[in-house]
Structures are given as C-alpha cells and as structure tokens.
Image (tube, rainbow, N blue to C red; front, side, top):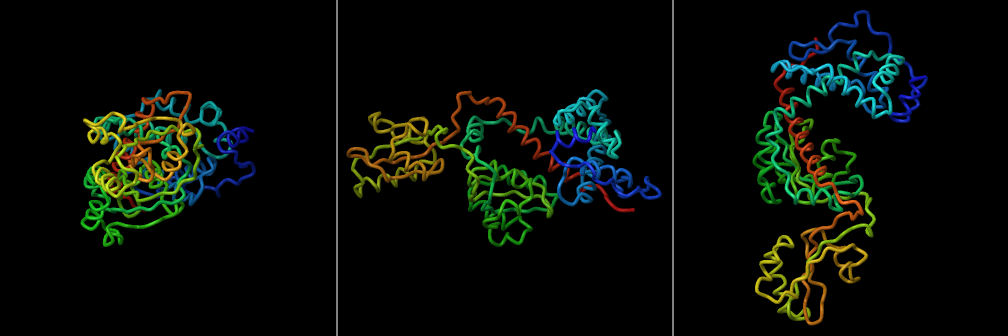
Length: 401
C-alpha cells in the first residue's frame, strides 16, 4: 500500500490500521470559523486535521489544524489584496518539493493521502498558501533585512553554534502587545547589555518579570515555545533575539546563559587566541597592568592598538587546531568563552594576558560562507514574516459562527 511508503518515508510511523475521523457531520460545508469575511468549513478542518495526523504531528491536533487553517487564510487574504496569485507551475513545484522530502513524486504522495481520507485539493491548498506567502515575504521584506557581516558568519560557524540541542537557558524577556511590532524590532536591533535590557523591560514589558528587569532565570528548553528555542539556540550569551510571536504578544529575549548537549568533538575544533605579554611574572605590578589592559579590550583585535610601538613578540595571535595547543594554554582556554580573558599563565619573566578570540569546527572542506550568509538572511526574513503574520491576525476579525 502507498501508505506504507508514505509513513516509512516521512516519519517511520506505523499508521496502518489507524482509524479515519468520524464521518463528517450532516453539513460538511457548514462554517467552523470565520476569518474576516472568509469561511473555514468543517470539511476543511477535518481534512487538515487528518493531514496533520498522517504526517505524524504531535500535540493537540484540533488546535493545530485550526491555527494552520487560520494562518493560511490570512496569507491568501493578504495576497488577494495586492492581486497576487500563485501560478500553477509554482504550486506544482511546491508539491513536488514537499513530496520529495518523503522520497515520493507528487502523484505518489497524493495517492497515498487519498487512500487515507485526505483529498488532493487539501494538499494543493496547503502548498499554495506556502508558495504565495514566500512571494509576499520576499517582495515585502527582502530589501529590509540588511547585510550579513563576516563576524555574524564567523559566529554561525563557531563551536557554540555547532553544539547539540539546547537543554536549558537563563533568559530575560521583554513582552509587548502584539500590535507593537515596530517597537519590538527596534528593541531587538538597538538594546545592548544587561543594564540597557533591564531598563527597557521595566519601561515597556507587560510581563510580570518587568519589575525584575525582565529576568526570568533558568528555564528548561522543554518549557519554552519552539520558536523561542530556535532563536535562543542561535544566540551568543548576552545577545538579544529577534522578535518572537508568543501567546502574550511579541517578545524579545536576552540570553544570559545556556546549557547544550555537547555535539562537537574537541579535537576537531580550531582555536583563535591571543597572548599579550606583560613584564613581571605575576608580580602585583604586572597583574595590575593586566587588569588595566583587560578593561580596555573587548575582543582580540583590540590588542593591536595596545601593542602598537611595542616589540612584536609582546603580542602573539594564533589560529591552531586544539590538539596543537600547549597544554597549559589549552587548559586555560577551556575555561573561557569567546571574548573572555585570563591572567593565570606565565611565560619566562612575563605575565600572560590570554584571550579566547573564537573557536570553530575544523573541517577538511572549507565552509561555504555564502550558504551561511543565505541561511542567516532567510532566518531574518522568517522572523519578519512571523511578526507580519501576527499583525495580520491582530487586525483581522476571527470568530466562530
């Protein structure tokens, strides 16, 4: 049976023998929801619910089906306002793309769905909404996402970005009403540092955490919405997320700390570090000078200004595979995050101000930086699309008949 192909190819689920939904009520085309002046029928709801069930969706399928249908209707209504329609060729390509993820052709995928109670039109409508939304988002926001810096690409290739799933995170939050999309984006783009974030939370946030400067504390990843986890997993400690749609409205988060499953083999990492040598082997004067310099440098590149006019051997900057590090340097760097420094080491008669610049996964295949740049741009577009969709929903009268 084609269902065997579908379930194995998509999710390895044993869907054979699952029961179809109860027969559609007497009038399957009676309205279940009204989105503006557009009707979502009981039949559409039953079809989308069954579609999600066959795909192995987990959770409250009734709620998931309603939410998905509402959002698809909002997308299509927005497209109709600018007289934008997906071409048959684009829809066909979208159907082939989706079915291809299961190793099937569009015809095979549709046949498997129909054998299990889902009409071909249900699949086509699902794809059409996605295709048209992609066109809307690109047309509306492509010129607004800005450029991706080389530093952002470096962070995306860093060891922290390659780690496994997030286990828990220490976060602060600013939660705004869903209509304050412009302010949410402004805060995400401009707020830097814990003090500034706390002040913005006290001024703007509608959450109970506002009086604590937005501080939520340590939260297990399983307690956070998936959209929030996705944002936090790509952040460095101290960074602020892009706006995320949440149940209370729109939120931005500052990551204060995180724990992830370590999925990176230390021996496969390349370490970029700097050592600035200060005369005196951990003498009080040398340590005081080290603390003074440390207060002036936020990143390894800042050492070049400090070392200007000094003998070149006073500043050492290297990129090496972790196994090639001297044992004492490796042990000290293991305690540091990028941008952090240490005064624990001595070289000859010098105190070493050691800073970890960055560390990334080493590979025999050079990283495709253009691909990383495109991924970051797509993530920005996705964040903007989520905010825009939330605005459409807030401005549309959605009700039950």
